[in-house]
Amino acid sequence: MRSVWFKLTAALVIVTLIGVGLSVLIPGLVTVRNFESFVLSSRAEERTGLAEALVTYYSGQGSWEGVDSVMFWFRGSAGHGMGPGGKPGMMPGMTRQWRFKLADENGVVIAPSRSVEIGQQLSPDEVAASIPLEVESHTIGFLLPSPSMDSLSDLELAFLGQVSRTIVPVGILACVIAIVLGLFLTWHLTGPVRKLTSAAEGIAGGDLSQRVDIKSKDELGQLGQAFNHMAESLSQAENLRRNMVADIAHELRTPLTVMRGHLEAILDGVFQPTEENIASIHKETVLLSRLVNDLQQLAMAEAGQLRIEREPTDLASLVERTVSSVSPRGEKEDVRLVTDLPADLPLVNVDSQRIAQVLFNLLDNALRYTPAGGTITIKARRMDEVVQVDVMDQGPGLDPDELPLIFERFHRSDKARSRSTGGAGLGLAIVKQLVEAHGGEVWAESEASEGATFSFTLPLSH
Image (cartoon, rainbow, N blue to C red; front, side, top):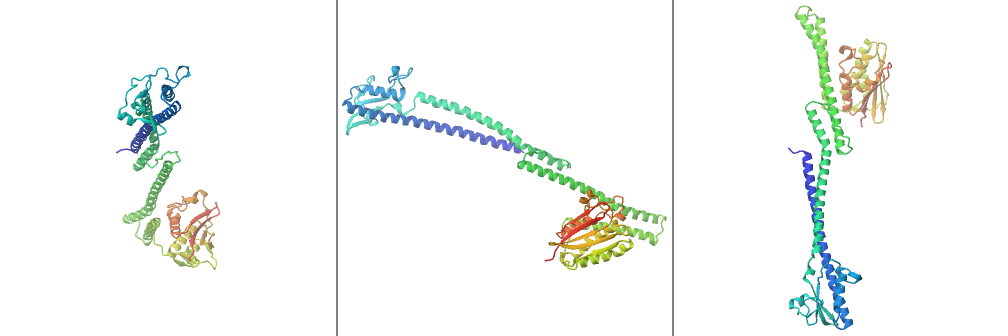
């Protein structure tokens, strides 16, 4: 399996070779073409200029006598510089090569004077290739360029060779530098991917402590942050799962141990199967059944599978009915239940049975922690588009550090309480799930030694 680094590197090398190759090939071809075009264009201008100079000379002299001076001067100024003494001629070290022949109107070569071809007759092909010189529509001669005028000289070819020898090494050097830098960049870019891969493999192997250290602020950095957040969430979820399994095992073990102990005592003849002993076992089965039902209800609520049948509901009447159902327990424990409900409290769109359970759980929790002679107050009032319900007790209150955890499963504010007096720690978790299933919010407020207030909101019925 080829890695991302290998693929990126291969792609970079291919792109670099193509890019540098084109940057060398195209400029080289353009340079050669432009240089050839420039040289040939310059020579065409040279031919035209010499032809005009010869026509002007003939018009002034009336003959070709002394025309060598024009040919010699134009040869020096056009391509060979100035000779000794500042006169037109060849530069030192250059060979004398005539690039034009001048013939008279009969096609007989008359210049340059040092050419061995003086007096020779131009062939018909040479006459056709020459430039006719005319004065007042009368042909006075022919200017025949040398065949070398249509090709590059050795000096010009040497220049193009030097250009090619310079471009190719530069292109190769550019390829090497680009590939080396590309290898470094791709290795640097794929570094976070390698870290993520290693961390992901660790998490897949069960090590949820894996984190990645990616300090860049780009998309890879954002991916690293998202991975760390995911790993943290998985770690928290695993811890919650382990704690929940341990808590469930603990909550189930207690009633089962009590029931087993009583049953074994009856079988061994230690206890008699009296009504009192059977009632004790029945009490534990009721607690066990309630725990299982609470767990099932909580699981369904968290999975979003809890059935909610909403309808316009008179919340004041619902509160009164729930308070009446728990009043006997309050009287038994010498705790007074007081309601504060306005007469114009609007209807709410809720499942009355589910909200009755919410109220019952909150009142049950308040009764556990309110001492004898205390008071529990249930208030309700409209707040914009919701109705807020407050259940206030006069218990010992909650520690500020506990407030974020109070609605967690199996959480008890008083660790010293037994499950028979402190509950299984599921009631408030069920309250949170049921209220949020109705689109409301739930929270707790408390000050040490001044009781606690549990509040929730419910949407109005429109």
